Image (tube, rainbow, N blue to C red; front, side, top):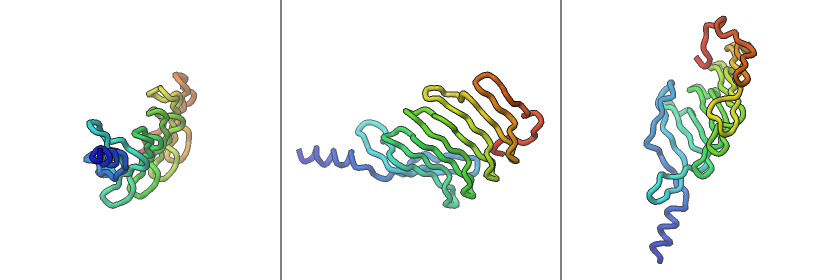
Length: 154
């Protein structure tokens, strides 16, 4: 019986985990770190804030988890400027997902509904902040993409 109690404590208490997974974010490799609960015969269950840092030490990504389900996601450029952010609900992207140009200006807004893998609306902005594309569902409202040489987030 005492062994069962020790086993339950070892399983239920969250502990810090350094994931074996490294992510190539296009600006360098990142290693994930956060807290998790170990469940016998299953992968660990993420809890709270998970982070990934660039080799320079600056924050590259952060995800907030609730019992294995991501809730909030943020990604950063190596200089610390926000690159993208969004929210999840029941494991699906929800609401506004925003990406930014390296200069900090808004680059893309994708709007998601829970249960749909693709955005229901999208707006793309130039690095100067001009709206160059806007679509709602299948209807394109603004399309100046051919007039702009740059690509978002580049």
